[in-house]
Image (tube, rainbow, N blue to C red; front, side):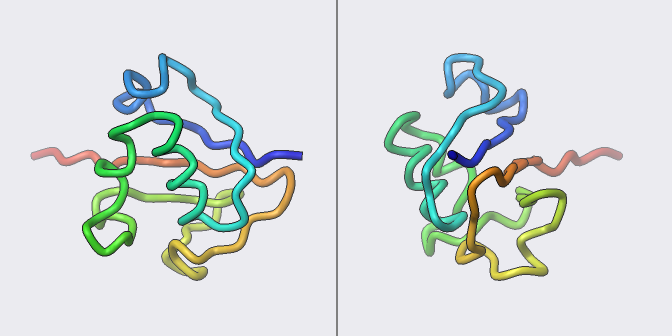
Length: 91
């Protein structure tokens, strides 16, 4: 069983307007790599030059923030749901 990645509206133009994408990755980092191979340009919006998730991007695995887990090394298991949520600035 694959893991599901919920794509936020601002990034759907890169995923052919798909809201939910399945990946077969073992970690968050691998999931981002897999997304990049299928949807070129998505990784640069999610990770920095070191491969770490950008400050203004929140990633959750089953509603748990990966910053409180193991970041991009957070392990994934079958059936997990990954949510990518870009921060929204306002003022």
